[in-house]
Image 1: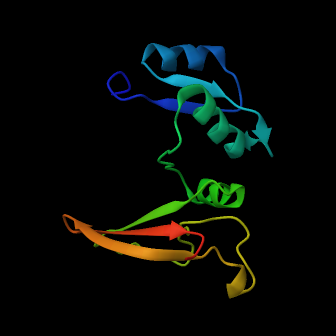
Image 2 (image 1 turned 45 degrees about the horizontal axis):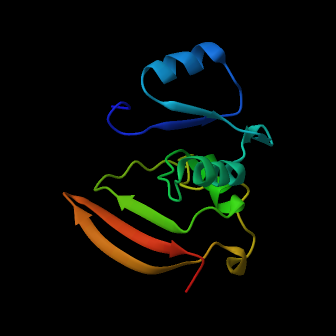
Length: 131
């Protein structure tokens, strides 16, 4: 629960009613500047470091958040979980959204894989940024 584990929620829009409900549940709500209508991730990381002494976060979200975090340069470690399930589908979502890259040398490079298992799942951890 958010009362036993510190929970920080970042948002662009300051909705006082929602903020009050979340804060009563024990979360800290941080209203950030907007970056193209979304949370400014660079500002957020600087704010977390200066105000809360937080220098590392677990960022969970969809493909667009993953792309935004990579583009903002705030990702230094990537954890990829592979479950023993196949969903498939020609319109299946990719793990990272955005417009993608045209050439392999423009891709985000990963290095130093460490592989472990968690039950039937496989966890692969990489450093982001090559060697």
